[in-house]
Length: 218
Ligand code: SF4
Image 1: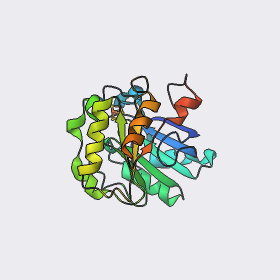
Image 2 (image 1 turned 180 degrees about the vertical axis):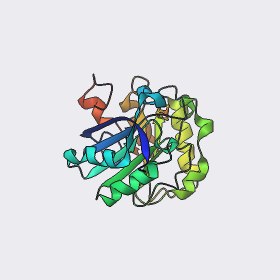
Image 3 (image 1 turned 90 degrees about the horizontal axis):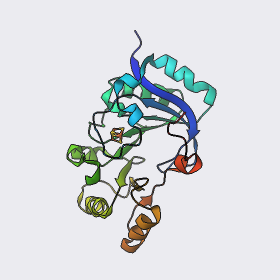
Image 4 (image 1 turned 90 degrees about the vertical axis):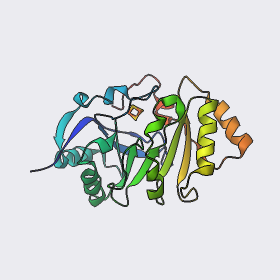
């Protein structure tokens, strides 16, 4: 019997974040998350009941009309569901370049190569800082990305210290700094990064700039 995943939405859009920002991308958003971030911007996907079960072959079929080269599995938290690595493997076998966005609180090693892991390190303002599974840093590989969502100066200083002190291959893994919408002006964050000559990328949510009134992917 085919594995099932609880899916919140499947859609085609512009990749709004990460080092692949600007590319056309097929998105699979899974329902359910194990965290409760203070500034969650996808609250509609946090409850598993927000999704419906779809088999992996059906998910792959539903992406086909988009004719996308890039596919992202996101959430919610994709690693809350056991079949997520299998979906990533199927999409890789179909020829997609695959991204998996994860909140960094669960073991990322099951995500098959060469899928890229876009992994959050939760900052203090999220209220979830204590849930970061720091051993994941040792598993990062070329093509993966680490993302800090920054709401204020305390978050920024915390993230800067993590880059300095954490044992992860900063030269192989892009580091993203993303301002929380409505909490921190992007230009302020940019100024801090410039002042510190920080080896990181300013990560703006392109989809929110393009479609500010849209509160879902599809
Ligand atoms: S990990 Fe992501 S989906 Fe889950 S509560 Fe935090 S921001 Fe929302």
